[in-house]
Amino acid sequence: MRQPEGKVYFIGAGPGDPDLLTLKGKRIIEGADVVIYADSLVNPEICRFAPEGAEVYGSSSLTLEEITRLMVDAVREGKTVARLHTGDPSIFGALREQMDMLHRHGIAFEVVPGVSSIFAAAAALPAELTVPGLSQTVIITRLEGRTPVPALEGLPGLAAHNATLALFLSVGMIEDAVGRLLLGGYPVSTPAAVVHRATWQDEKIVRGTLADIAAKVREAGIASQALILVGEALSDDLEASTDDRRSRLYDKGFSHQHRRSRDGGE
Picture 1: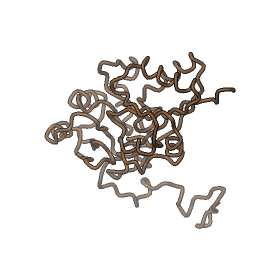
Picture 2 (picture 1 turned 180 degrees about the vertical axis):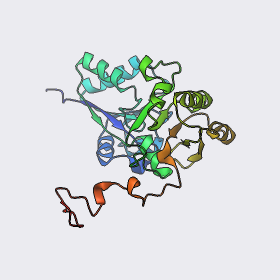
Picture 3 (picture 1 turned 90 degrees about the vertical axis):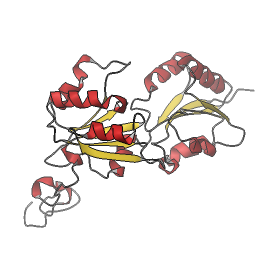
């Protein structure tokens, strides 16, 4: 008898709240034979969607080779593997190296997107990251640590744009990060926020400016699992009713294929 074909699904498990898992991700987990989840970051409650009898593994103590072997062996037995990543797997998810390994072994896989912590953090503040007249660009990056960043992607160079900036994996070095952002050209008065474990029950938000955010974060005892957001779009006293802050999408004088202008213009 021909062995049924298995498959690996890389699933974005979202920022923490199980309700933010996508319907597709939940459906795949419910039918999975093997679940491998980033147990240091992914809410274990999400693994409860797996059927009784499913094999569940935490990946924090495993090497890439060990994770690959689990996936390859399962698929070759015709099993479905749900590989759960925090947030969305495409952002700092160590996804590429796993896909490369599966390619090498001829294993079929699919990526299921998830809600990134950057969007969960923005919702928690709440803030719009792209405000007309202030910032129409969002830079997603990290501070150099044990893993280097490309030479042209250092924080001072990125800071020169004065765009909205999201720093992953960097809150433990926040003083260094702030220094580089200031060196690159952000004014010391630039709004900043740190969101710790967005959407979890112990979520914590610290707001300030580049002048005081590092001290406030240290006082709050936040040293990991947090996102740093910087930029004028984060200001909590923006006057959105002014013309230069409003999107043209709903402006009565702006026409598009679904609505004609209502002030006599085209």
